[in-house]
Image 1 (cartoon, rainbow, N blue to C red):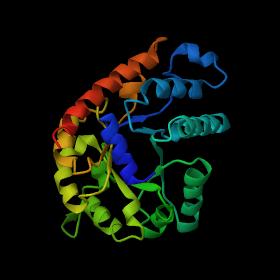
Image 2: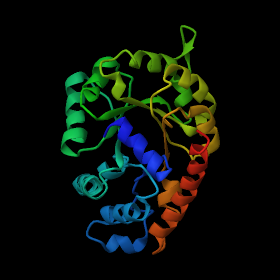
Image 3: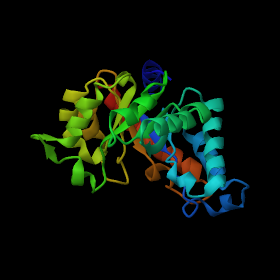
Image 4: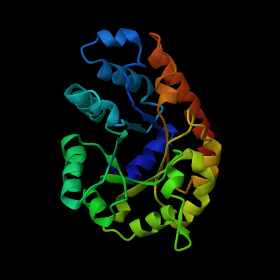
Length: 272
């Protein structure tokens, strides 16, 4: 999927919502545990109820890998269902990969060729030769961890190196890599006050922003400091949507929560 196609979906749906499919069998409705594939059954119900309200889905691969081969099969079925039924939806493999070049190439093939995701999250710590293999894939996007919303982000990301925060070095250096036009970036919603500086460095790139909702991030602040002329934001909510209810109406309840966020986003889009 190209960036322009993503922007068109945002305009059409009046939404820049990304829904995280982080499936924990301890949290899904009990009746689904009787299904042959409870994880896929849960995901399918959520997708069927919310696809018209969001522009992206983001399965965190750890929630599938934890269940071994069965979990990976559930992930495979989920992405195939999305690509078949809703090819206009932007898909994100939240895998946070990053390794030496030939290993990164294999990771990229796994997510881009085999599973056919549109994008994958990647850690930048090993630098250029660990990220460029992902960037080489046409019409695929690499979402680089830049400034995350967890407490440990302050251990390294905001430390100053040569008078400048490390995350700013990451942003500036990544722009010099081959096919850097295929980069997007993760910036946590709880770091909204940093977005103005970030936009000075990467004014035109899309930002994947987790942390709105359950983690306390504020949508309006993120939009105020992070939105650009093409919107440039994908706001992710995971457990704040998918686990609103554990009853039989869980998918309907998730859709109601997603609709609330979509309506808030429509207001912000009208200000552009």
